[in-house]
Amino acid sequence: MNIRARAVLFTAFFFTAVILAFITLAFGYLADARKEEMNYRAKELAELVSVTFEIPLLEKNHTIIRDMTDRFVAHEDLTYLTIDQGDTLIAHSRSLETPEDGITVVIEEVENDEGKLGTVIVGYRNHYSDNMASPVGQVLIWGTSGIGLLAIVVIYVLLFSITRPLRKLHQLSDGDEGSAKFSLFNVDEIETTVNEVNQLRQKMDRSYNRLQSSLRDHEFSYQQTQIVEERSQAIYSASLDAIVVVDEQDTIIEFNPTAEQLFGWAREEILGLRLAETIIPERMRKNHIMGMQHLLQTGEGQVLDQRIELSAMRKSGREFPVEISISSAKTKAGYIFVSYIRDISKQKAREEERRQNAQAFELAFPMLIADAKGHVIRANSAFCEILGYKPEDIIGEKPRSLTENPSDKSFHTQIWLSLLGRGRWEGELGLRHKSGYGVRVKARMKAQHSEGDDLQFYVAHFERISDNKEDVELKASLEEEKQSPLQAG
Image (cartoon, rainbow, N blue to C red):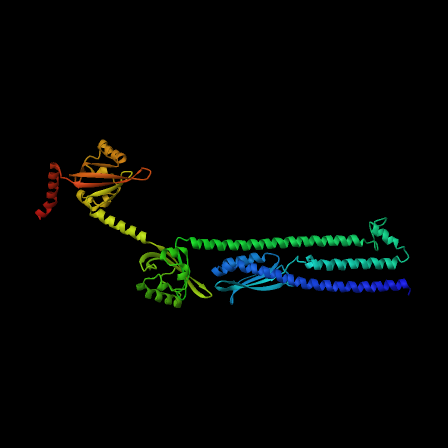
């Protein structure tokens, strides 16, 4: 074997060993790097999913959890997604189109300040990930490809062009004749390699773009979750009702700003205290404690999920009426009870004022109230008594129909214009009793106008004067007619 043959064989063996070593190192590195990258991406995705499911798990909204699970698995990189709470499986969704191999499984705990809410299990399989995008991976791949190409060129030149002048290779490298294409066995290896590298780069670009899009989607979901949390906190803080939350031990665990204003307690000083010892009057505490014990034992409560009126106590010890609605929720730590409380002191005061006004109306002199269209809307018993009518006989009638002269339009128009212009009218009137005789009264009428100066209603007070002679005789005659059957008997 001549020196050239030995040189060719030695060179072939040397380059083959170098190529094998580089290939082995490259694939080993890529396998490890791919595994680490997949674990990192799966872990990152699991953390985002756990943050997304935190509020639905806290609210135990299983419908939303299952819907969101199906939507997550619709992404081609998620093989399956499982959500559970303790030993309870809440949701599980799996993609039937994804192969079983190459799946990275990550388990992430969903936690908040109150403790563990559940567990998220993610099966992740990236269809386009390629660790050749890393600098070290590119060096290994390009180095391996370059050495391989160089070995092929050197072996080809040594085996088939030993007798050719070495300047031919120099001409090829300088770009002279024949430098455009260098064909080995009628195949342009350089052009083919460049095309393959370009295709690989295009695939890597597409994979990178999809990864970026996926990360943007996850970031958007996280931002939406933060927005929902901020809105919930804003609603909680801005609620017009006082919100008080207690646990199974009757310990106050939440106290919103409205509750601070209503009861006079600061949130920091009341958290951790018992509800029965702070805002419940002493005479009601025993019933409250018995009700809590009954609820925890039977799951039933008479005051749950309805609005009731009770007495509450401020920090100063002063009692006041409230309207309260209580709802319960089951958590891992046990039951919590959410109370929505509203101060109804002013409402009760208005009701008492209306009751007193109604009582005063009934005990006052004869009077009626008519609306802006001139219809009677209310008449007290004293007015009904002097005319012999029942209230239902008068309500809805025109006041002038109760007078002696209902057809005297000029007289009644004068009264109406005075009410509209001056807001009042005073004078004598002749009313007609149900039996037909007249009743003379002194009337005082006062109009009530709106802010826009429109007539809303008017109130008429009547003071009985006397009956005229003919009406007295008619009244006496009617009385005799009523008594004659008794006298006959």
